[in-house]
Amino acid sequence: MTVVTATSPKTLADQIEDRLPQTQCTKCGYPACRPYAEAIAAGEANYNQCPPGGQEGVARLASLLGKPVIPLNPDNGVERPRPLAIIDENLCIGCTLCMQACPVDAIVGAAKQMHTIIPELCTGCDLCVPPCPVDCIAMVPVTGDKTGWDAWSQREADAARERHDQRQARLARERDAAEARKAARVAASDRSVESTAVEPSGDQPATHIGAPADDDAQAKKRAIIQAAMDRARKKKEELAKLGAGPKNTDAVSPEVQAQIDAAEARRRRLGMTRPDEDKSSTPAVDPDHEPGNDNNT
Image (cartoon, rainbow, N blue to C red; front, side, top):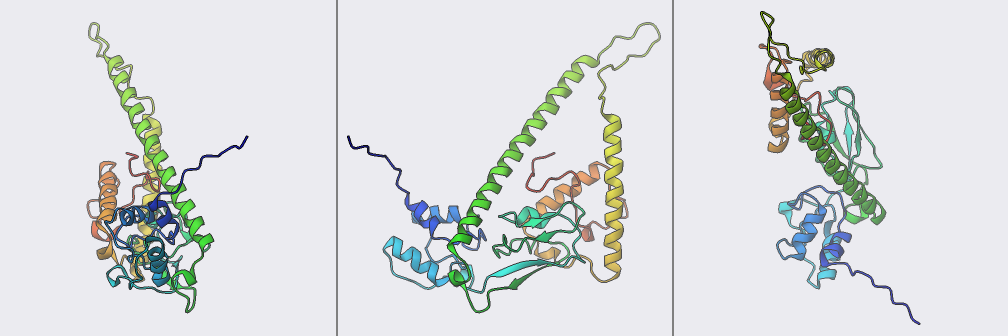
C-alpha cells in the first residue's frame, strides 16, 4: 500500500517572505518583512521597496511573481553596503531605548549600564539610531563594495528571521505576564479593601488590618531607584560639561517620544524628579521598565 503524506503548500506571502533579506528595517514602509510580504501578495505594495535586498532582491521577487524587473524605488532608500551598528561606550547612558528598538535582539545591556552590539546578530537596520538621546550609535559599512544580497546571505537572513520571530513571541509573553500581574494586583487590592473595615469600639480608632504589607519593600525599592537615578543624573551632568549631552532628540520618532514621555510621567508620579530638573535635556527612562515590555505599569 502506498502511503501519501499530505503537505501544506506555502502561500504566496510565505514564498515572498522567503526571498526577503529579513533585516526587519521597515524601509519598505511596513513594520517588518512579513507584513511587507503579505502586502505584496495582496497587491497592496510593489515588489521594489526593499533597499537591503537591492536590485537582486527585486529580481528575485519579479521572477516569483512573473513580472518584469523594475528599478528599486528610491523613495524607500538606496542599495548600499551593509552597515554595522557601533555604540560609543564613552557616551552610552544605558537608557535601553536602542535595545527596545532593535528588531533582532542584537544589543545587550541593562538599564544604566553600557550597551554593546553583537556584530554577528546586527542586520544593519538603522532602527537603533533615532531613539538614542545622546547620539552615540554610528552605522559603519562593513562589506566594502558589496551591496544588497552580495553583502548578505540566505543563512544570515534565515537566522535574522528566527531571532525576530523569537523576540516577537517573547514580547507577547511579557505583555501577557504584565496583564496577569496587573490583574492579580487589582484582585489583591479588592480583597484588601474588603478586609480593612473594622468597627471602632469605645474611643479606639478604626484599625485597618488589611493595609498593604509591602510598604517597607516599596519604600526600599524607591530609595534604590532614586539612588540609581541620582548617579545617572550626575553622570549626565558630567558628560554635558564635556559637550557630550543629548544631541539628537529632534530625531526621535513619535513612538519613542511617547515612551519617553510615559516614563517621565511615571518618574514624576514616583517623586523622582526635582522641580529644577530640565526635562528637555534629561532622557526619561522608566526605572522599572523591562525592554520590550511597555505594559508593565
